[in-house]
Image 1 (cartoon, rainbow, N blue to C red):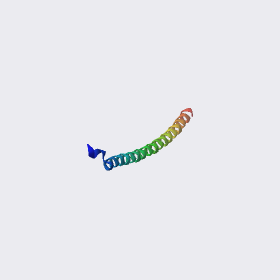
Image 2 (image 1 turned 180 degrees about the horizontal axis):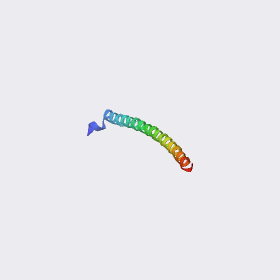
Image 3 (image 1 turned 120 degrees about the vertical axis):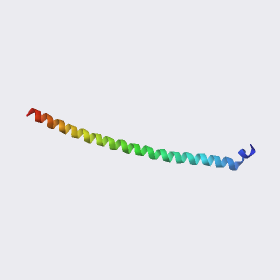
Image 4 (image 1 turned 30 degrees about the horizontal axis):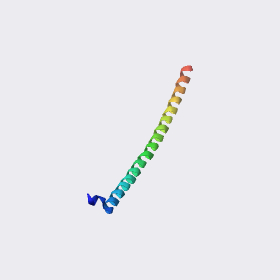
Length: 66
């Protein structure tokens, strides 16, 4: 039990916790930015598909009315 209260052991434990938390934050921060890019890409793709469908619907309605 005495070796656990050694200042060197306490310092190593604190440093390891701090370093592991920083590494975890760096990893999760990269994940968040990737999700934003993916959501933006999917939204743009959806908007393009919606625009194409709207054009097709206009053409079909013009063809049936003529």
